[in-house]
Amino acid sequence: MGTRRWTLDEDERLQSLIQAGRAYSYVAEKLKRTPAAVRGRAVKLELTANINEAAPRSKEPWTPEEDKQLRILVAEGKTARTIAADFRRTRGPFGVARKG
Image (cartoon, rainbow, N blue to C red; front, side, top):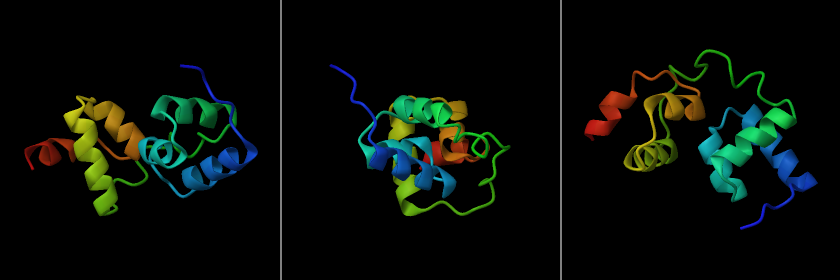
């Protein structure tokens, strides 16, 4: 399976979604890319400065869409650290989410 080149439109959407605080997994779904591809492109475009700040969304409520994506990632066996980074949250809430 080959890799697709990023288009200008995808770069603009990537920038917009990341600036809006969206998780890599969410952005990947919207752009039909893997989270790793999204993360790599964000780094290349230097869009990660705000993403790497310490859990800026830790006190915001979860959206139904985020909750659904969280359950998928947990079912796939992703680590709390990986999920927390994707959602820009602390690892604390993930133990509770696994029970539901």
